[in-house]
Image (cartoon, rainbow over all chains, first blue to last red; front, side, top):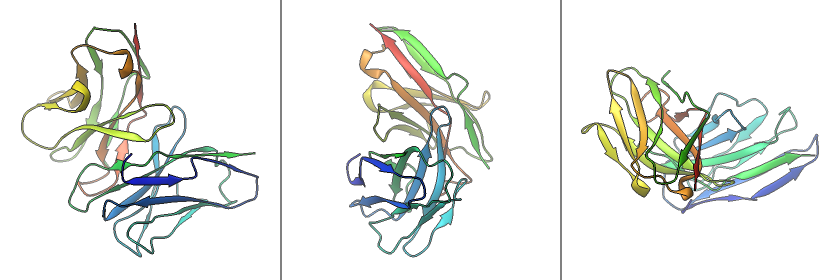
Length: 112
Length: 114
């Protein structure tokens, strides 16, 4: 987990509210990623960014938004349009020329 | 798009016995393959990768993986399992090429019984 921080660790949201999950890395990595993890479904890609001010949708982008204004930060907003947001959210990063991704500790979001 | 499959949801093994967690892949060209481990309520930790070279790849915590091109497999192995190896294991491959996001299998839960 070292070098990538996610906050908060646990987050509770009421239906209809937007919430923003933080992801920060001090590894000077170029690319950053957001995955969602549900039991028995592995990890599914939400959004990713290869460089600052640019990002692409993953497999399940609907109901989510991101920004990449700084190299070290890639926040994820879970909007009220996301119908089933309760899940474990994982942020990852890697260098441009590298292969393996490094993961943060995750944020568990629960909708009440 | 490239993909991986983990055919077993759960693997149980006695402490001290060898363990194998299976992964098969579907790729175009030369595969880049990865194994990660996840402990409860934690992020994923990188274990090892195959890019090119020897078919037997050694990684962290005594784990190794065997790349088999004819069987399109990349099974994770350890000669002697520890109770502390109990965790969720994921196989992964880049979506298209080496510099695209990783696509993960659904995971295999390993339980090592004392």
